[in-house]
Image (cartoon, rainbow, N blue to C red; front, side, top):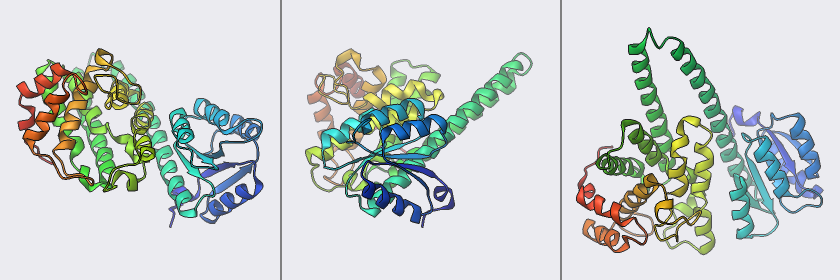
Length: 357
């Protein structure tokens, strides 16, 4: 049963086919949503221009006049806190990946099954509430900082204590979100924290400042936050992924970037999240960056993330022994990984770290 907060959410349904609009609208209204049905992209833009209080847009991709791509572009630029779910008449993975990169939260294939629709809607609304909460937190944080600056000369000690407490709050919040991501996949529980410890250990050897270490810690814990938008059945699949499933999984750095970029405090970790799956030889994703064009933090994370993945049980294979994982890192130095950072990983014996939950 959908909770009260979700029941009161306002949703626009856009489709040029009256039958599709009515079916989707009826399913949503039965769950208690406030639904507005429109038949053209022009009508959606008109409504959003006058009223930005909608919580979700569900839009068809192919339509006469303004199509779904144009409507999505308008929504992303003008109502950035409102998630968008796109509808398509055929399972076209290229189109799906395209709209996800353009800013869509999810896509569904028509005819839409009720269970798939409700699952996607609830996840999208949860994401929207998180974005709005983060924005409110950012405004409150700015106000708090201004108030502190007015008293800085007389209250230096109090300011230091407040900032220290703020870091603890941020870390606790990030830990909670990281734990929520891992809750859906028993095979990666503790993964974010282990990656954080190893990345922190390597960065200390490179002489990172306390602030730089903090940002790296946050980035390590949140590097997989984009997987919150991916179907757990794909993430937990026991066999190999199909090419289409792999393309969907490869959207998670972009989704994670969109989530984290809503909070200015975390602006420095956006590159870590977007580029932690780039390869040193330029064959990674999502942008195919090569060599030094990949930020150092992302290169560090790539190594420790891969090492922990190899030495942990996964749905599709058991954990590799430490010596085998080390062999893989050495073999991929200069190809998948920065060879100098692989050397540092070995020199600092990062693989010997012991972790606590």
